[in-house]
Image (tube, rainbow, N blue to C red; front, side, top):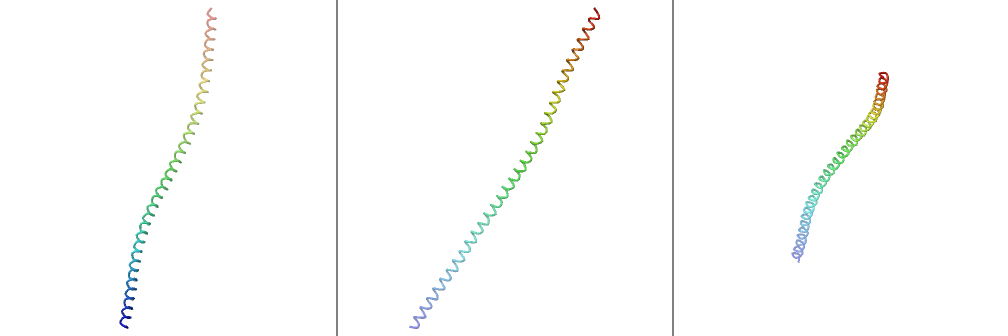
Length: 120
């Protein structure tokens, strides 16, 4: 009977040891699986960080380009205003030249008429 109890006790201890060994193996497998998942998540995280940085750089570049365009537009507006002002001056000068020309023509006609009368 004692032998039977020892056998039973040994069998129970062996079973517990086997279960403990299986649990250790399962824990190792679980850790390896989790480690793999962590590695994948870290890689995805790095990829997302890189994409975010590229997106951020792209936004900054577009903002700088927009500022450059706005600055150029402002310069063109200033140039347009200057040209418009010059055009007005030229138009005024043209009107003055036309009046001066008309006056000169009238004076010449008057002078010619005066000389014709003197000759007669």
